[in-house]
Length: 180
Image (cartoon, rainbow, N blue to C red; front, side):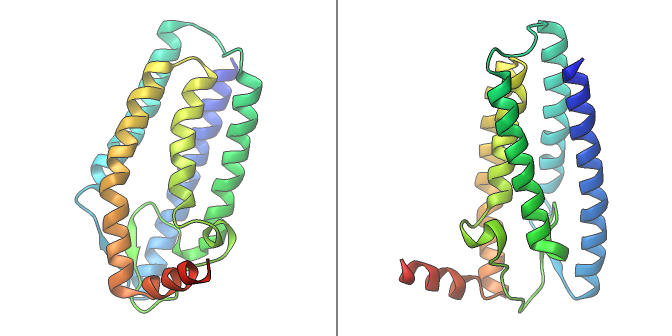
């Protein structure tokens, strides 16, 4: 029962995020933003949908129940969700599931973005690991962690190059490195 409740809440959260992303995309495009990396986006969406499907199938068919470490994994999962909300709020209208670039914009350096370049991707990595571990779905945890790493190895360089080409990204991160 706890599995279905958590899955329902996470799926509702994702649907809410899609609404936020679409609203932000409309605003950004009205300001002159353009998309990069569109060719890999359908694969990323497919991977995320498949993650939920595989997780549900593995949990239902294995019937292993919750992990003995469920309380720890669940607390970590809640912390990751708080970080997700912090990421979305910190980026405001710039948060999106697509790579949308608004030329000549100042890179956001507040919230978790003051401490790391891609905290939202860290959230996704942790979530793809923690959700299956809570319910002993080890196959899903392993496979989708590898798939996500592969996806991010394509996505992050595309995003960073686009930000370097069109924003103050290089200046912000060179300054950060020289301050260290």
